[in-house]
Each structure stands twice: as structure tokens, then as C-alpha cells.
Image (cartoon, rainbow, N blue to C red; front, side, top):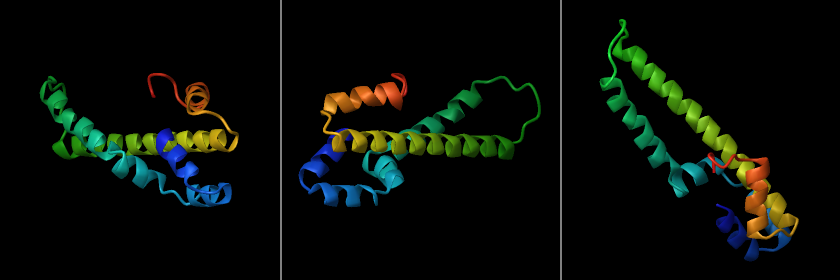
Length: 118
């Protein structure tokens, strides 16, 4: 993501870059261009295997389980979107501040993401 933003910045003036980055649809970028939607779909699809392997301890309808899965998916989407916004914000601050790609990545690990999230 940072590489894409740096490439974009190199091809534009400072003003053009700031103007364009402010209109970036982060969700579209993360879920469609980077492909996180496919990853999320695969993760959510794995729930069925987990549920089939569990011993039933009470009466839970399929509708209830489906609602819980949809809730998890919505929660993950919000978290991914929020982290994406923070990553882009940190990258833009770093680029405008003249930081290198490595410095921007280190700043993200310290300020935005834990190593396990990255």
C-alpha cells in the first residue's frame, strides 16, 4: 500500500497528490484493489468447518448462527477499513514529511499497527 502511494506521489506535484489522496476511496482500494475482500470471504467461509466440528450444547438455529457470522464479517470489515485509513494517513504524513519508505513503515508499526496486525 505504501509503495502504491509513493509511486502515486512521485508522478504528481505536491498539491495534486494531496488533492487526489484526499478523495481516495479507502474501502474500495483495500477490499477490491488489494484483494482483502477475497481474504475475508475465505476466512468467513472457514466458519462452517469450525461450526461443523463443534459439539452442540444447546439449541441454536441456523438463522442465529448466520446472523452471528454476518456480525463478525461486518466487524472485521470495519476494523480492516479503520486500519486502512490509519495506514494511509500515516503514509501520507510520512511522504509529506519527506520520510523514506522504511521510515514510514517503522512509524506505522510504532503508531498504527502492532506487528501481528501488519
